Amino acid sequence: MIVFFDSVVKAAALLLLGMAAAIAQDTTRTPAQARAAWEALARAHPDHCRCWDAGSTDCGLPLQVCALGRPVEPLGRRRFPVFLVLNAIHPGEPAGVDASIAWADRLLRTRDRLLDSLALVVVPFYNIDGGLVRGCCSRASQLGPPEVGFRGNARNLDLNRDFIKADARNTQTFHRLFQQIDPDLFADTHTTNGADYLYPMTLIVTQPDKLGEPLAGWLRRQYLPRLYSAMNASDTPMCPYVHTRGPTPETGLIDFLETPRYSTGYAALFQAVGFVTEAHMLKPFAVRVRATERLLDHLARLGVVQGDSLLALRRQARERVRQQLVFPLRWQLDTTRWQEIEFRGYTLREKPSLVSGLPRRYYDRSQPWTAPVRYFDRYIGIDSVSKPLAYVIPQAWHEVIDRLRLSGVRLRYLDADVALPVESYYIDYCTAPREPYEGHYLHDSVRVRKVEQLVDFRRGDCVVELGTDKDRFVVETLEPQAPDSYFAWNFFDAVLMQKEGFSDYVFEDTAAELLEHDPRLRAALDSARRADPALAGSAFRQLLFIYHRSPYYEVSHRRYPVYRLREWVSFPLYEDVRLED
Image (cartoon, rainbow, N blue to C red; front, side, top):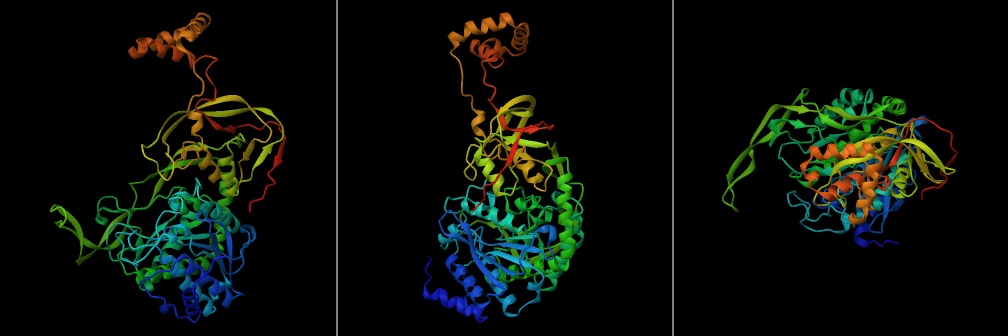
């Protein structure tokens, strides 16, 4: 049981009286204070707000979730859109924590009709772990509040890079919640880093091209123009997230490409329309909170106004994924297409640094400017792959199987030992950084070689059948070339290391026998020696050349242990009957 101090209870009581201003606008709530405020709202409005603990976090405290408005219905018979809001994934960027409480308080006190047409689910404080590490200085370039939390969680993970690898218990709990409610709209609240400009709010949107038509067209032509108009009309001007093509906004803005490691990238794999709200770090905290609250409100109200279209288009998108045969694994910016948007910025200047004496940059707020800039918001899918009928994963790779289950993938299991004709990948090449990234040595530049083989599988090995609305998630996690595949995140690195070898003085005689009885092997070695002087000058490398082409070389070395089934053969299966907590 968590015990809250009297001051926290008093703060929550003041909130219930509608006195949000009593909580200082230059401070932000701790995880305990946020929990107390939501529990107070649920007690005051039991018919319209309920809170529960959805699961655990890495710091051992439960993850609170609160729901307002309509009950969540399955997408197939859903009448009202579901909007999921995630706060404090980075506790140093806490505007959403306080904005969500103020927004919910207003909706509940005024009995706002929005709640009659929307299922609103809020995670009040996602990275509780980082929220407990509270201090003055974790956000060195941000204008307040005086105390905020820390970006890393209890395992020092950036949770907004964890949505595929799911190392954190926080993430695993989120996956269960996400699959349970299957949101139509999703917002992840943040604060910016980077350039200075006039806008109190900027926005990252799920890259529309990744959603596919007609959902992409609806987002670009229907939803987003109305959202920007609504924000401007409410005296909260907003522009796309300032991710610049060059050093300054004048060089153009680039639509941020969120891969599935990020929250909205994960959500997009399930056809949810995601948003990252990025309040501007150099605006006063009260301004950031107000801008975040207004944006959440407009996101929800437009979702209700266009709810019928949104729900119908998501159902179409699900069916399209079921039928889709080829999936792009990577996306490349289309520099031939852009739109011009009006941008309001400050002039970038230089002056001598007081630290080094060398020129330093600064934005001159006495010299604002407004001008059209190019906004590059189109991406082209590349490195496409055709989906198989099914993937077969040996049960030994349970960490991957468990993560598929967490994300709602239907799993079946072989009910007998069987040899199956499959496509196998061999990892011919991949790179890894010298330093770890979020606890992993993330692979890149993956090149594979495809081989048809008859592979022996055992009872209990996992079969992932394609032709479902989870196909995009399955393909992007199980195809090793994808940037956020489970292979990229090192779940299969053990296969990259050769386990058996030879003693050269013993294998000399064996190699000679192999060459004597295999003319093609001898011809291959002769050809390789002519082409490679270094090979010709190394006795060991020639032995290794022969070993790698001999029956003694382990067939599993660098063989990716997820196999593609291209044609159905008869084999017995049983269903996964295990239930998640």
